[in-house]
Length: 327
Image 1 (cartoon, rainbow, N blue to C red):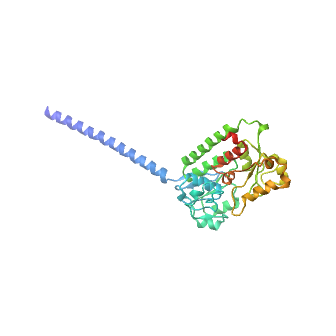
Image 2: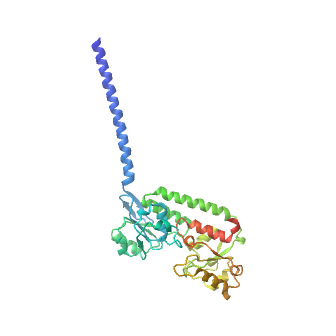
């Protein structure tokens, strides 16, 4: 009887040990699998498809990123540590035109003409090229073995959000990109709530005095910003295209309620002199904005921004035209 009981106890003990061993194996295997999954997400490769349909395989999150535009520098700086950027546009730390000037100071290298030799010398592990770059340059960089992702070159809020998503995916930081997109959407919803109910007959006409001789007409970034701000772009209203020069005759024909004058000195521009020349120009004395001295400044860093801070440019335009709605 005792022998039978002893045998039974041994069987129970053996069964318990077997079950315990299986449970430990499952537990350890699960932990190891979770660790492997985590390591894979952190260091494993991933693929990115750009706006030209090219698929690029990246072995890991890039750490030496170069972008081929100030606007994409601004996007990258807003979502990534500055240490992950190998170089920036030469104006990236100029607060007069760059929305990320403070953060840009942490990056020492600068590029001006985006020539192949300089870009190769930077040894980037990712090049972000807006689709407005020369295709010849993009192809040359690819032929040289550089990993290039072509993104949308924005001229509207919708395209800014598209570019933010593309850059975030290429950098391996989709959540950071999504956070910026949500901020843009919140800003735009607030602006729309203030201007969307303005009747067409009561909309103000705005003209931009630009640093560029040919900028601001129909289809331009500024034109789309005006639409979102609930104002009429005077240059587009008189038939100017996005690459047409704004003449005095066009300003008179547009008869704007508000003229936006520069804020960025661009190294040598005398902003006060520009204002006085407009106010004193005999050819412009019939223009409403001149008669009422409605020459307003909105930061050029925002008016020319094709990145997430485009919303601040749109808000600035709307507030210049409808100050009572933005008090």
